[in-house]
Amino acid sequence: MVFGIDEAALEKIVEEELIEENVPVAMGTEPIPGKNGGIEYKVSLSKDLTPSVKDDGSVDFREVKSITQLSRGDIIAEQIPPTEGTPGKAVTGEEIPPTPGKPYVLNPSENISVSKDGTQLIAEKNGVLSKDKDLLVLKDYLEIPGDVDFEVGNISFPGRIIINGSVRPGFTVEGGDDVLIHGDVEAATIKSKEGSVQIEQGIIGKDTAYIYSPKRVNVNFAQNCTLETEGLINVENSLLHCSCYCKNFQAETNAKVIGGMVEAEQSIEIGHSGNKDNTKTELIVDDKQRRELQNKRQQLTEALSLLEKQQMPLMRDIKNKKKLISKVGSDALSPKVKQQVVNEANQLKSIEKKLNLIRKNLLLIEEELEKDFDQSGYVTIAGTIHSGTMVRLYREVHKVKSEATGKIFRIVRGEMKVSNK
Image 1: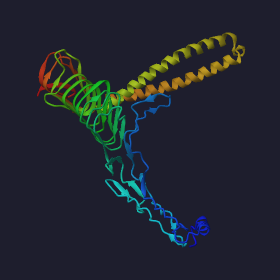
Image 2 (image 1 turned 180 degrees about the horizontal axis):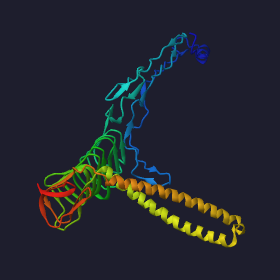
Image 3 (image 1 turned 135 degrees about the vertical axis):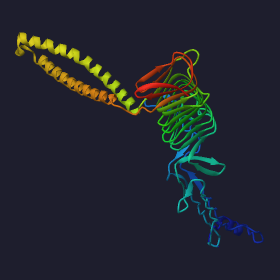
Image 4 (image 1 turned 135 degrees about the horizontal axis):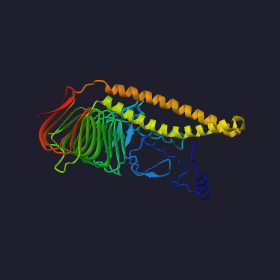
C-alpha cells in the first residue's frame, strides 16, 4: 500500500494490540464520472413581450419579439462537449479511470443542417424557428395561429405570411412574399414587397387602414381604407368609401362600389356603383405617366406660389433701399445696411433663378400633357349605376344624373361614348 494510508489507524492497532480485528488502514478514491454533453442555444426560443423603447423615451407596445427569425448561415445552437471525469486512485497507487460523459448528438431537421465537425446547428435558409417537442424546425414561411395583437406585435418577415386570425387596429404586417389573412383587418397596415395580399374576411379601415401589394390585392369587402397595387384589385362583395389605386380593378358581378374613388390605369369592371342616396362614387381610368406628370405639376405649382410669396417682400425692401441710396448716397449707409442690401440682392437672385427653372419645367409638363396618348382604357358597370356616379376616362368626364343599368364607357375618337353592355 502506497496511497491513502491512515496513520492514525495504524497507531491505534499498535497501541491497542488489535491483532484479530479488521481495521481499515488505507482508503483509495473513487473516480468521478464525466458529465454528459449538451446543447447551447445561440438564439432565443421564447417570446419576449417586453415593449420596445423609442429614441424619445416613449414605449411602443406593438413592437415585441414574439418570433425568432433567422437568416441563412446563422448558428442556431452549439454542442457542449462531455467531460472526461476525474480519475480515482487505488491504495496500491494505481489510477482508476473514470467513466467519460456521453456526447450530445446534434441531428439535422427541416431546413437545419449540422456542421461538418458535428458541433453546430446551422440555418439552411431564411425562416422562422420553432420547437416541436424536442425537434427544432425552420420554416421558410411565417404562420400566426391566431390574431396579430399585443401578444404577437408588429410583423416584418422576408417570406410568405399566413395569419389564421385577424389583424387588430394599429398593427403592421409586412411580408416579402404573399400575405394571406384568414380573418379581418381593422385599421391596420398590410404590405407585401414582392407578392400578393389576400384578406378572406374584410377590412374595417376607419380611414387609416392601408393595403399594398405590387401584384394583386384580393378582399371580400372593404370599408374606409386605401388599397394600392401595380396589378389587380379584386373585390368579392362590396367596397364602401375606399380609395383604390391599381392597374386593373375588378368587382364580382353582384359586388357594389359605393362612395370613395377607384383609379385604374387600364380597366374598371364592377357590378353596381353608388346607391339610392346618390353617394358620390368616382371611377377613374387614367394613364399612370399622365397622373405622375399631373402630380409633379401640382407640386411645382405649389413651390412656385411659395417662392413668389418670398419674392414680393424682398423686392419691396430692395426698392425702398434703392430710394434711400438715391437720396443720401451709398457712402452714407452703415456697413450693416450695405451688407443687408447685398444679402437681399443675392437672395432675390437665387429665388428668381429657381422661379425660372420651375416655370420652364411647368411648360415642359404642359407640352407632355397635351400630347396624344393611349386611351384604350374602359369602365364596365354590369348592374345598377346610381346617380352620383362619376366616370372619368382621361380628360373626359361623365356624371350620371339618373339611374341606369349595364353600361360600358370608352373613349372613341377623343370623346367618351356610353354603350349598353
